Length: 331
Image (cartoon, rainbow, N blue to C red; front, side, top):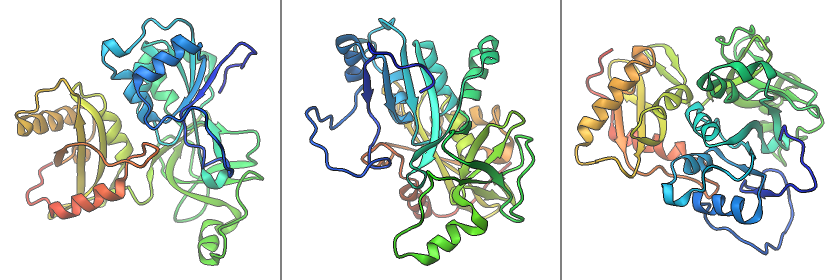
């Protein structure tokens, strides 16, 4: 976390530990499910000043029922979030509630966090929505990571720092694992040309900060054009009826693939007319993104997740496949 931790500070860690440690631990206080009420209660009762949580937990906090919250916060609460790309809309809402969020990024293979979206003083004077968008980026390398770059998947050369040209995020340093046990083929692919290849596609900005656009397996190719599922999801989170969203490719008879949005609606939303809601969401998206990025299908319901709260996109891809191809797709 970017803030200084003092003797009087209290840390509450809601993140999964298996990405960073290998040990057996006897827990005196085991939480099987994180709730917004529990987080607010810990802040008020135990004076929690810092906690770590995945974006899914932050989304739970910002969408909590009024009776489950304690606002305004009794003191400043710093949050470190990791595990998935946080939607700017969620970071914006957290900031409005008084939380100060720091975003980090990494993999189990790089000992957890290897980049941090370090807050810049010049961001203080920017509009809150701009601050949230900048803070949602994956940032710059940790001091323990020797090298971080975004390279072309075709040439292996660094992409220009224009915030547009997409490439694969690669890393090198003594916090990167030595390799996968008894899997030489995976090691050869993962460590090609002396880099650890993350499998994440991103861009590099002029200020040196990197930003994930998608997992290589999650990118949607529609009519020969790449679509970032992460960016489509970020726009969906801005819709007032959307609680959670995940976007995957669905077969499309005209375009090859088109975005399919799986959406969980907020509890207070009237769900009696899902057809109208789907059309409203697609209309909303048209005002936020290029026409070919707009989801051509919207499916409502709870999203499948791992025990740590990560959305299981492979399950959603299977569901999209079961739906069959989109018969009529209009730009």
